Each structure stands twice: as C-alpha cells, then as structure tokens.
Length: 94
View 1 (cartoon, rainbow, N blue to C red):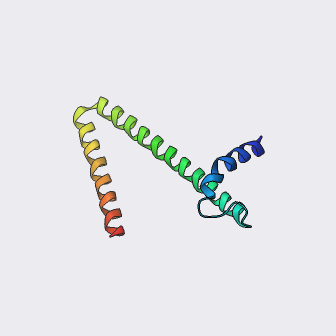
View 2: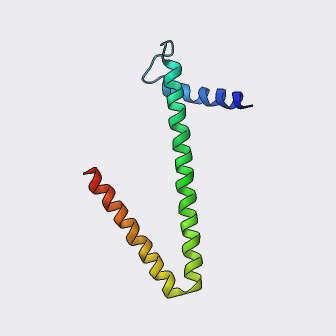
View 3: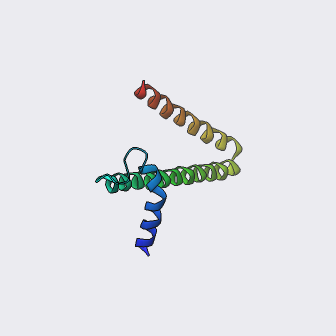
C-alpha cells in the first residue's frame, strides 16, 4: 500500500522534476525524490499553518465570549505579538 502511494506521488512529481533534469539522466531519481520531499513538507507546513490559524481563532472566540473587554485585550496582545514577529522577520530579511 505504501508502495502504491509512493508510486503515485512519483508519477505526479515526475513532470516537475523533468524541468531541470532530463528523464534519462542518471540523477533523475534523486531529483524526483527531492522534489517529492519538498512537496510533502510544503503540504504538511500549509496544513499545520491552517490548523494553527483555526485553533488561534477558536481560542480568541472562546476568550471573547467570556468577557468582552478581556477578549479585546487578548486579541490586541496577539495582534501586537504578530506585528512584532512580522517586523523582526522583515528586519532579518533586509
């Protein structure tokens, strides 16, 4: 069963891997494997980010429902934290 999954994944990845490397090149299998790993990591990362966003939203909704003022303070604190992280990432890139 795992072999079928890997085979289907490699069939889907082959056209992407064939862009920089010829199909009959000796290292095509290596490039195909690397592209497959990168795509798997990207999908897992996107799923994690999406889930983390949904969890954060659920927590904020729960906190806001308990106390309107407290919920606003927590939401503002989260937004300030996100802005600090975004600013630090931008200063790191620049």
